Length: 403
Ligand SMILES: [Zn+2]
Ligand SMILES: [Zn+2]
Image (cartoon, rainbow, N blue to C red; front, top):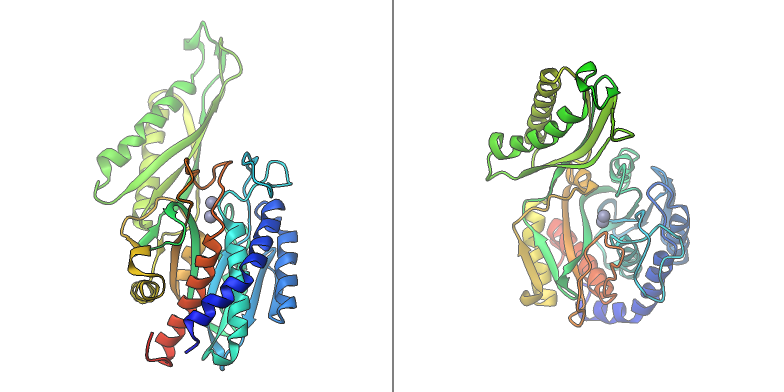
């Protein structure tokens, strides 16, 4: 069994260099599907470490592989690469140089941590019973790079049996980790509603058909699906985030449009809400003499953490960083994450690492223009990924007695 204290020492030795890599990625953020320079940086680093790598998977996705004794079977670790369309307002010395684009979800940290993990596991390769696949995934914040990367074989050769991923969590103290049992993230679906009327003078509404009034009613009526048609012990939500209509205060417009998202913890509830939105909006439009068109766009499925991995990694991290620094969460988050696709057909687990500095007066959440994680989280990130991979290999091959 590789000695965990030696691994910790080695992480301390490479820490500063990995922090510099993170700052470099942070200063040069790229939007979903445009992660070209980030992809080049990752590939250059993997090549420098003599790690086998492949680029341009499902856009700018990259995989790296360290071969252990069994070159046909392995464990996967995934990190996202993309940034967000946000103008950074933090005053850090390594602020984004790309105006209007910012790593506000910590994907710069995730990528840097995985490069550190790759370095450590590569140094341990002679002791690894199985191989390891490092998966750098594009476009998590928009169309999702996980599904196309899987379709293009990122879980094959070696055959990947388990995949882990971490996400930074600003509400959790730095140095801590958090595991969620069962469903960790919601299923998502976007919807777009257009209500058609007949334009006329605002002083003579009876000469036309007002689309705005039924559209406003639809926005309020669809909330009753959640409060009156769904079981309150099984969480789900509808958010309308955009509404637009009209050009001037005395003109009845020809159409009104609104769009939003549905979040549920299973696909059955998502489909039920879609049906009810169709029914309600259709009936309201008819009642007002208007008509409407509704378009749904299913996004990610729910993310369900594997129960065996949850128990195994919880136990491992309690031994390695101390029980008091390992939190257990049983509440799912209504956010969506396309890591969900890695959990289908594989054992998958996504966990959180804390980024909150105890001296910070204010905590900025994910997607905030001032999000500024404590970089000490990189140490915990690498240690937790390396220890998790070793624990999973041990679980699958029973190589070491003590883990
Ligand atoms: Zn995000
Ligand atoms: Zn994220």
